[in-house]
Image (cartoon, rainbow, N blue to C red; front, side, top):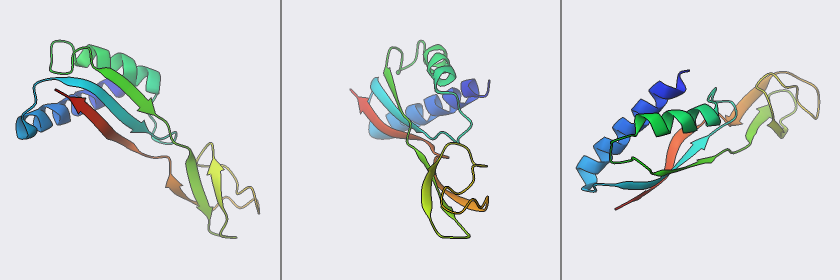
Amino acid sequence: MHEMSLCENILGILLDEAASQNFSKVDRVCLEVGPLSGVEPEALRFGFDVVTRGSLADGAQLDIFEPEATATCAACGATAVIQDRFDPCPSCGSHVLQVKTGEELRIKELEVS
């Protein structure tokens, strides 16, 4: 369950931002988690609750935005939504796809006080 270490890294970012931007509480965190990132959103929710206990983000609302994964086919140039990085191109069947989106894991928004 690497989501716990990811949550520890997220808390570290929040602490760094609190020090540099002078806020004392995080009310809401919005994460962008792509379907090809290898992260389980429910495990991330559990880990976030555990890791942030007693911190400036204790009780913060965690919203997870899950964008679609897209790729461009090297053979025909089509861009398509994919479910898995090994999906074939829906236009020509080629498996030579360049992933464009879907690997993201980033803090998209913060609400602080």
